[in-house]
Length: 219
Image (cartoon, rainbow, N blue to C red; front, side, top):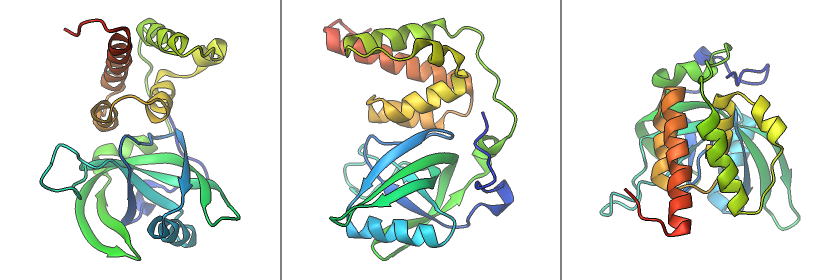
């Protein structure tokens, strides 16, 4: 899967520091689009500063497992590029953030204008910028079946012909970004380098959600 366009950076041009937006149960994956409603002053500052430079900031989840440190973050996030935005009359910014490349947090720097800034290590996920299409999985039937059951329980009828044409990498990345699966599951998908592993975690998360809603015992 490629996220490369004339507007997106090459690996050597990625920023050395990155603003981050910590948000629970929210990720963006490479190539996926996330809609955000920005209203806190510190994050309005972050967006304005990003628009003056490389148009990028990172989405990273707070690590709720570290009860003694409420400021703790998971060590892997994904940088996105602001690809569209509008300002509202009441002072908010509505924007589309398109995932570009995942990163590991090397260290955190002093906050700037209220928002957090990190030094990203891009190396583990350099392939996110690869222009070659990621190899598809051979059997997508379990994925499509799980998505079908998930949508039916919510009385949703997606464009199945369209979904069948989407490469699995793009489909998993987009659905992992958009669907309200668990925080830990989203993080596991985000950190998985191989498509097969991302697909397996995503399908397992969908099936777990369906079991919990039906009251079936978990094994």
